[in-house]
Image 1 (tube, rainbow, N blue to C red):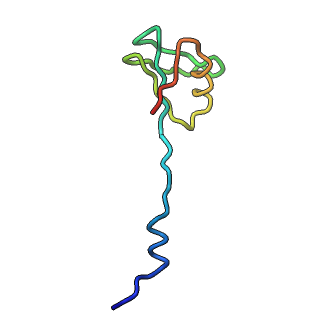
Image 2 (image 1 turned 180 degrees about the vertical axis):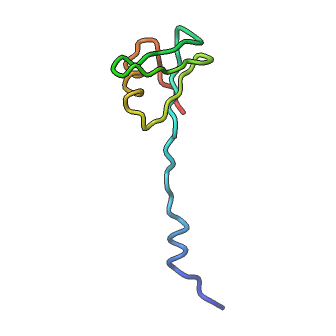
Image 3 (image 1 turned 120 degrees about the vertical axis):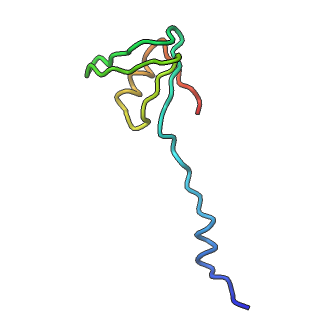
Length: 75
């Protein structure tokens, strides 16, 4: 009988936690509108009461978190 390779069994148990690719915010006032980021003039579209941006987009996340009409959704 062959012995199992110890290195392969430890590699199989390595867990990598995935990070969410997008952050979603709920608009508590409108179901459809366009939000303009003041510093850059970028447009962020609200559709069906939600706006979604990449989690790496720090500028948009900061703007959306500070907006009084928006709430982050739990993914």
